[in-house]
Amino acid sequence: MRRPRQIAARRLGRTLAVAAALLVVAGAAWLGYGLRLDARLLRSDPEAIPGEPALLRAGAARGAGVFAAHCATCHGADGHGDRGLGVPDLTDADWLYGPGRVADIEKVAAHGVRAHDPRSWNLAMMPAYGTPIPSASERVPSLAPGEIAAVADYILALGGHPADPASVRRGGEIYSKAGCYDCHTADAKGDPAIGAPNLVDRVWLYGDGGRAAAIYSIAHGRAGMCPAWSGRLSPLELREVSLYVYALSHATTPHKVR
Image (tube, rainbow, N blue to C red; front, side, top):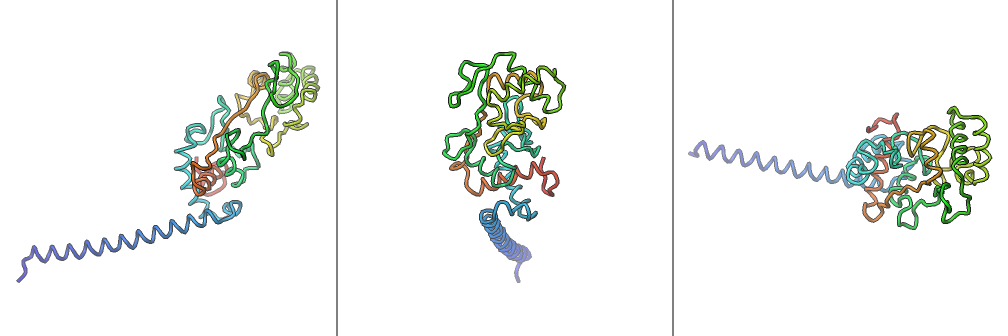
């Protein structure tokens, strides 16, 4: 007769073998799911993914880790950015480059802003109007401190802030003379095709939106930079992190991450 211990050992061995086989099957199934998800994320039209909630959720969940590892250093763990440094808030649905589609976000992530990449966004460079040579690439005039203050008053008035009417009128004339409309457009609502900010929507990239912050930007210029991640992140990681950022800015979607 077999001893009880031998019988128990054999039963345990069979149980462990079955468990191991189940783990192998489950692992293979999970690996297969992961590979299918990879393929769907990469092969799908990026603009069609938001219309597939499950796929969007899965991609955004993966992208959270990519964001934490590579983007949170500047944009913050919650994506709210830093107006002291001109790092955009990615949660407010106000977009500087393009209208906020997944493909637009992916382009910025891949090629950056004023980065060492031939496809980087680099058309809009804010001149430093308070310096002798405001721009190295554009012929624009320097402005005196009073003129800069008047332009700031004009911009603030367009955004609904109180300002001296005489200064606002003068600022409007200087806004045209200095060529501000060339990037920000005549109504100061900006141009997302080149990355020129909307100056009247009360969403500020630099500072608190007050007069002093506006004067500083006009006088000293702005030229923010975002690194290009193409070549350092895989195409799949770029797609995933773009979906995560898209999710951050769309509060009505079921996968909203804050």
